[in-house]
Image 1 (spheres, rainbow, N blue to C red):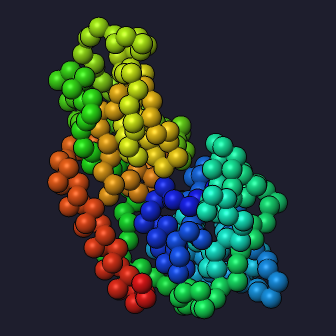
Image 2: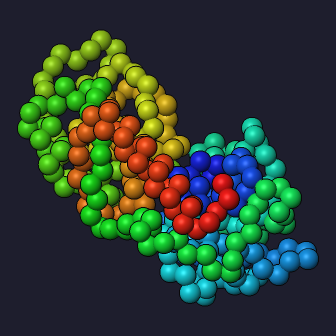
Image 3: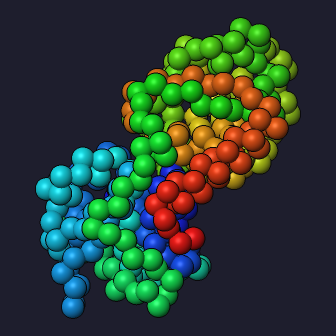
Amino acid sequence: MQIFEQALDPIAEERCCSWKGKLPATTAYPADPYCISDARVATHQAGMNRHRILCQPFTRGLEAGLRHDEAGIPCLSGRSIGVLGGIDLPEVLGSRSTYILGAIGGFNGRKPAAGDVVPVSTPSTATGQRQVPDVDTIPEAFRPVFSKQQSVQIVLGLYDHRLTEAGLNSLLNGEWKVTPVADCMELRYSGPGVEWKEREQPFGAGSGPSIIIDAGYAVGSIQIPSGTQPIILHRDAVSAGGYAMVGTVISADMDLVARAAPGTATRFVAVSQDEAIVARKELAGLKNKAWEALGANR
């Protein structure tokens, strides 16, 4: 389990944070999908005997001390939960999140481990939190789709011109599978590989086919360091480096990437910047309709 300020899955994060008047005190727990099975999702607190958790696509009240695998909510083994009231941890640089790589903030700068108790705040309507019923179901039409096959939209560039025609065809038409090498920084994919154009190596750079003399990385950038396995840079990724980016996942599909489990078959679909902007607006509209259907006071 890992405590985040900016979730890998922003849709789940927003559902969690809708309980609160302010986003900085986030209640989202986008968890490491490989170790959440032992996490406790309900904790004791003086004067309270139950907390609410949000789980796609619904919320439910749980008794204090109940393990998530006893709660009858199978999707808790997926990614995100939110605790009504928020996580009661000191702010570091204005955030209660944990930056694992730098061991900064959140829960002692690390992932909660077996036996840890993560403190939560007392829910209060005075702070802008809305009350939720014991079971609060998101209408099926607005629920995210979980599938072992995905189509992820990308905008090509800045270095897709470095791929041969066969290499670009492989990137866009090949099937890529998410490997277990995946975390908040990056997700690595295995597949048919890509072919790069031959060139004279630039001065000051290494000898790999995808090496460049440094560039900035947008969130969602796709790089292929080995020349064979694409890597999607996610929320905690580095902001610059010396590998060519052949494309960038559009913002509307970043949550889709975050929900991909190891083995998920993925195809990359090239779209224009204008199409990416339209997709972002459509996603925002869908989220608003979902909240309207729930009667949430935004």
